[in-house]
Image (cartoon, rainbow, N blue to C red; front, side):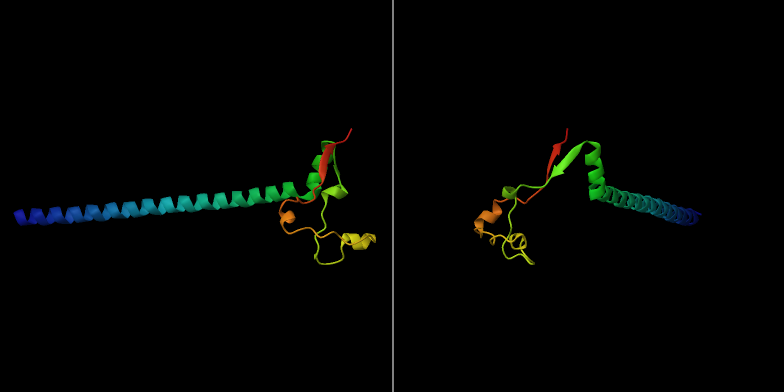
Length: 123
């Protein structure tokens, strides 16, 4: 009788451990599924945000917003631009019929900014 009780206890404990492991496996499966769904949602949101950023940076949208705020863009002045020698295609000075561009020292290239349009409010 004692031997039967010991065997029954061992079998019961083994069955409980098996059931516990199965329950934990199911919980882990649900946790993985939730994480995958969250990942999918976050990736979709990331794509939507990238699209929104690209849409907001689109030139026609920027022009429309600037016009709505009564801001006009002015072309850069001649002293604000720099024609880089060795660039492919005809130079701006050659197209305008003026003398070729002045060579800029190599070190000076790091200190000269790029030409950008200036925004100012129109009255």
